[in-house]
Structure formats: C-alpha cells, structure tokens
Image 1 (cartoon, helix red, strand yellow):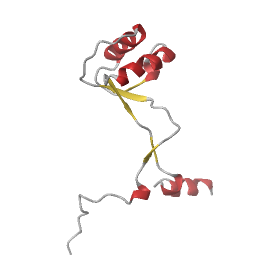
Image 2: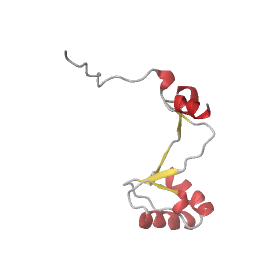
Image 3: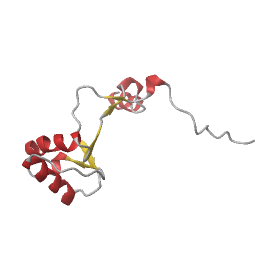
Length: 107
C-alpha cells in the first residue's frame, strides 16, 4: 500500500493562521542592505552599534548598551528602511497545538 504524501500547496484554514499582535511592540529587528545618512546623533550611534554587534543577523534591543536610546534611534532607522522589524505573531491558546499539552499538565 502506498503512503499519501501531503500536498505542498496546503495552507491551514484562516482561523488557524497566526495574526499580528495589536498591543505588542516590535522587539526583534534585522539590518537591511539600504543606505541613508541618518540625521539624529542617537540614530547614527544606534546604527553603528547594530552594525558592530549584530551585523546582518536578527537582533533584539536588549543587546544595546542603552535600551531607551536604542528604541529612539531605531525608529529613524526603521523609517528609512535601514532596519526591518519583525512583527510578533499570536495564535489563540485554544487553537495552539500546545493547548492539549497544557491541559494535561494542569491535571
């Protein structure tokens, strides 16, 4: 008997697909290949620190020396497409594949 191979073009129903969280701020970023001369001193310092610490890898603002200044500096970087933010995706707990594991742990 031959095994059935799942169709590669399958996509889950819309209700099971993750959605972008409304209330969460972006916390993970990655550098792009774009170039732009940043105006603010804080933005230039932040971008320089990103380049030395993270390179082209995704990073979080926690690696920065001063998170408050980094948050302010990264805003201009995002506006001019020097840095790209990754949105936080959420799946309702009732639809999560781990929800059955959570229920077993509570019992």
